[in-house]
Image (cartoon, rainbow, N blue to C red):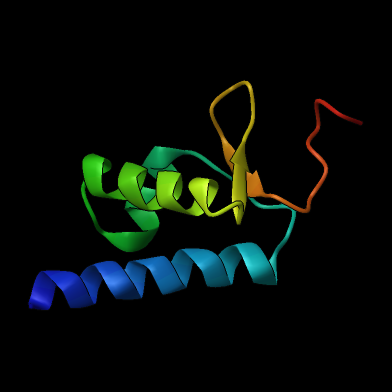
Length: 74
């Protein structure tokens, strides 16, 4: 049960950061530092947000808010 709460809190924290600062570009490692979760869990969260079209991934592998233009598109 505690693990589920931590994952839910991490998901909310990541979403909140992207909404608060739409230009955020985040690596898996950065997500792990912010949430305190392991690589596999952070990757699963970021991929779920990508699949839900909240985030998108750049060619370099960084995650960005889907509505924000990527540096590659500028």
